[in-house]
Amino acid sequence: MTLTYLIRRLLQAVPVFLGVTFIVFLLMYMTPGDPVDLMMGEGSVVSEEEIEQLRHELGLDRPFYEQYGRFLAGIFRGDLGNSITHRRPVATLIWERLPATIELTLLAGVIALAVAIPAGVVSAVRRYSVLDAVGSIASLIGVSMPGFWLGLILIIFFSVTLKVLPVAGRITYGTGLEPRTGFFVLDAILQGNGRALVDVLKHLIMPAFAMSVVMMAMTMRLTRSSMLEVINQDYIKTARAKGLANRTVILRHALRNALIPVVTTVALNLGSLLGGNMIIESVFAWPGLGRLVVESVYARDYPVVQGCVLVYALIYVSLNLIADLSYAYLNPKIRLE
Amino acid sequence: MSSYSRFWRVFRRNKLAIFGGLVVFVFCVLAVLAPWIAPHDPYMGDLLWRLRPPAWVDGGSWDYPLGTDNLGRDILSRILYGTRISISLGFLVIGICTAIGVVLGLVSGYVGGAVDAVIQRVVDTLLAFPYLVFALALMAAFGPGFVNMVLALTYKEWVTPCRIVRSEVLSAKENTYVEAARAIGASPTRILFAHILPNVVPSAIVVATLRVGWVVLMEASLSFLGLGIQPPTPSWGAIIADGRNYLFRAWWISTFPGIAILLLVLGINLLGEGLRDALDPRLANAPLEQ
Figure 1 (tube, helix red, strand yellow):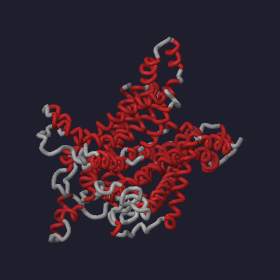
Figure 2: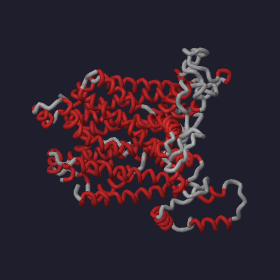
Figure 3: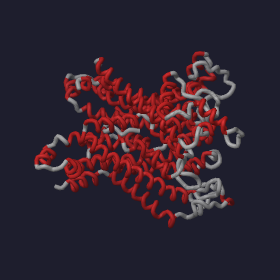
Figure 4: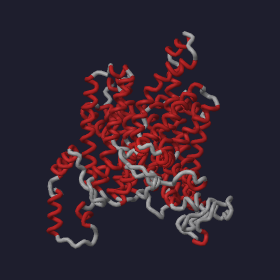
């Protein structure tokens, strides 16, 4: 990848970043009701002067552009303001919740890819077979299903009827796990705590699966169509004509090329997976970023909502950037443009 | 052979697409007829009949085929009324977004230059927000309600038609018929609306159909979280949320509305893909943002 391409693409991300911060700021600026009113709560006895004083301290009496400037400067210092309900810095709250969300999203991504890529390849290689038909119908159902509903159905089946998996949460109290990294799977392995590891995985599996289904279905469809396109290319015919084994042709020559668009889309999908995790986290009472947003929306804790939306958007922009760069890296044709 | 008959010849051979179209049609009919065919009032419950299971389960009754909820309201009737919300919101949002997206896409692609740059930066910025997160923030800021819901679902949805129409315009611009129209002195507006627009309509229809299902899912998600359509109005997402506290005693409350969502969205997707294959197969790999 040429350096100029990298620099150009990074520069293109700057206006997007500024746009994101501006929209997030505008959203909360236009929200009816003043943060001060929310902080005071209903029925509190405070004089007008005290309210004015607080507004002044928070900079709410300054002009729009100045408030935005402060907001932007705060972001660069890692200061996202303070939560109204938790009475703690928003950045700290987000930082504490992030590992739970990343752990869940990564596992969901791994499950999705582990199923989707082999299934997509088989569907393409055995086109119009029974396996292909089953795969295609399953993936169509996968993209048409609400993930939160699937989550509830899993709970009804595995927790209520079979009673083999916990309904909600991240860990059972009393497994003796000491959260150090915040990634419980990692913590359990590092501490050699087998009981905790099993417990953590039991809590993880249902939400991760419910979350993975959409990505699984989309990746499978994409792998299939991409494989079908590649299989008809001349270089595949050449490879076959050379007398290579079918397995080698499919795995070495076809799959590698077919995965180029898949890699890019997976990076993009990981972003939407993160957006969709909010609702899955709520269903399974998963103590991550998504549940923090939903709770803060209910509690009208606007600084937290603002901070979370910003963090989500930044992760999303970074993933888009990674998707673009990986595409350019994997596909030499793009670099020449 | 006219393009219409060519479309029909391809489309009608696709049995799954016909099935999808049929499913969507049935749901539309149910939505319209809901007040006449629903066995009970969707708002009024009979507490003597609360948490009754579906008819085929022990303790169920054919008076309440899909069972009742915690207030004794008939699940079937509530689902039938919910169809109205899902379908009307889906089509309304997509209608608005397609109109905005097509016009902006036409202008962006045809005029180019600074106008194009500005529109595309707005598109890039909106794409940076995960759909549901920002919709949730909007609902939080402006409060629940039908109009706010339409706004929260619209904010980003126009981006997909806009991008696809723009790229269609860019390639159409190079065609001889556009050059010919310009040579005989047609105005830019005329070229845009009389010559280029008809050529981008098929793609716009395909994208719009495929996105209706997505909007239905988003509406259900927001209502499930309690930030969309407010109770007691029966929306599918809200009924699923009602059943959440009764998963251990009454699995049917949450289960059936989810099946309704699945069937409708599946029907829309099958129909949309059939339309795509018949109208504009090139769109098969077009980016459909989340």
